[in-house]
Length: 297
Image (spheres, rainbow, N blue to C red):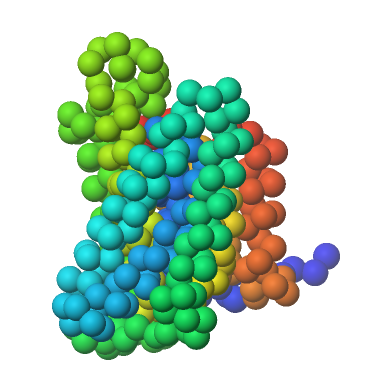
């Protein structure tokens, strides 16, 4: 036998990097999971909305408000409105059609192409960079490694979003409506719930979260028209691992994938690409429904 101890190869720095990667992935995956859990729509355009959040925040910070934090909120709200318009105009008429699932996939994939080309027309194909906000533009030493304070802030922001969503879904009247409608749309409608308006609100919230994720990630990566394509596959993997429609599952799945990507590159070439797929296969073999289930879980 050859005793091999891999744990010394994994340091605190790798954990922080993994949590940072997982936080960025969570902020896109949770909106995707919310929309699917309530509306049953697998939104292929979610990655494009994430990309729009980065571009909107960049333009707002550069040309409108000149403040990153205000631009963050402006960008996320703008993306939420875009998502609400998409839902009202193109997805709402498809809910009662016999082949609605396929129609929704085709429509949302079509918006991927439309948004991609619009971004090229407005901002061009060149990559952009967003400076780290001054208040967080310093480094922190953790376990002998140096990290920007902004990277740590994104981890805290992702945890705050998770707690806020959980409280919203579990402790508010609108959250109860969301849970009830996700379980039985027809019964909720018979009890007087305005299901179309609630669906639009949920689609706005999911799109808002995608835009928020893109805006928060902008200072940590370059912004280009291919940004949405680079994250949507990982977001789908996280949603499948966590359980379709589960918010806590999206959080656990995102952190799991982020940590695996951070650790895996030390043992497997191109590990950051292959490991999320391997993790999904293993989870589905052990628990086909994912780690969690249901919009309130």
